[in-house]
Length: 85
Image (tube, rainbow, N blue to C red):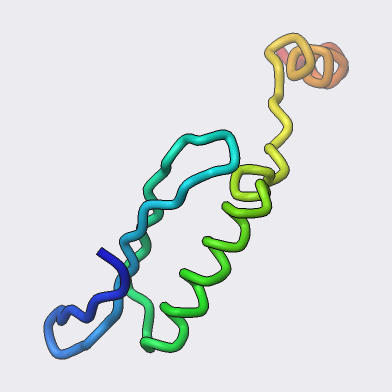
């Protein structure tokens, strides 16, 4: 585990495979491939470890969900206005 080098065709890349302990006691796996340099891979590992330690690992903004009722309310006015049938 950790940072390892691998080859694809003529290119050489680095990959990260780490187990990160979260503050609530849960251990989660962090994997990423196709990193161009070893330094970037090591920086990515350090950033992921810091986020996991601080409890910000999963604290990313979630995308707002569009409900069917909201979509219908937006579409209904246009549908009545442009009713060509």
